[in-house]
Length: 154
Image 1 (spheres, rainbow, N blue to C red):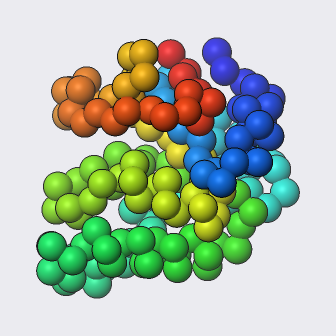
Image 2: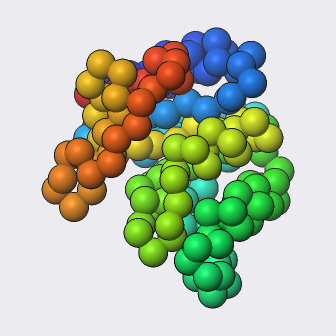
């Protein structure tokens, strides 16, 4: 079982990178959300549910324009949190087809502005990160460029 101390140790390592994104990956019930809640004792670290980063007007944006608009809208929502580190729970929301987003690309880009820790439902095989959705363990996959940015809870 991964502890908050282990996550903090990894965080200190990647906090020096230009891309400040740490993905906590695990299956259902692996402790991702619990671990994020435990980290809120860090000064300036705040937790937010991925759904809370969007307002109702987002769905009024034409689908083709959503990926471009999402970055600025989520960036504004993150900055309103006034946090040193933002921890995003339930990141699976970002994979909803109606949003038309590339969640990994977007999170990487946002992490240049504000350090992010996200909970990710899925698993990792070698250098491939899989997102699990609706019982499909390989609903989406992404190549991991730097394994230091992933902590597996399984």
